[in-house]
Length: 227
Image (cartoon, rainbow, N blue to C red; front, side, top):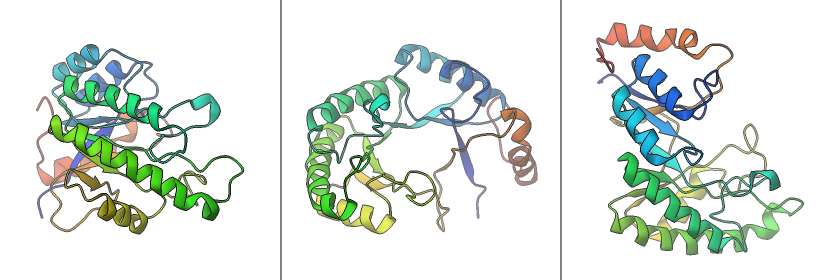
């Protein structure tokens, strides 16, 4: 099998650097050829595009805006009453994706409302999500972009996240019925040739902690950015 290709999620990696632009440059210097940015919206898209270009990086994924973080929002796609805000955020994400040459946008589902019973609100949230996904599919198709759904583990990562299993995500995608909406997975699949996202919180200095990846590249003879 061909060597795996890794992308640096700079919303997580290189936390020792304050700006996303600096993190992109650090990712390129560390040998990455591709990068992801969870939420790029704190910096102008032109500045991020310039940093990625200078670092020799391909941007492969961004997320839609999370919503109001102070109120605990983590995406708006399935949140009742937030449809207008989701669509505004989608427009912003498309603007950034085009400026960054990024072909994929993670359409974040969001969290079950605080205090609500997941089973009781599941049907309403799925209806809202499907409405927003069908709208997003049309918008993204006009720009030749792909929308991704990512189930998030509610036992480990985010207890209130609405989309919590691959089976649930696949069922929703089937109902949405749009070829440019796809499933985002964190697992290696047989024959997979895309990028594996390095999305984790480093315990120490990011560059020092990437020794495992440098070793992998050296053993596989894999080209790196700047090499």
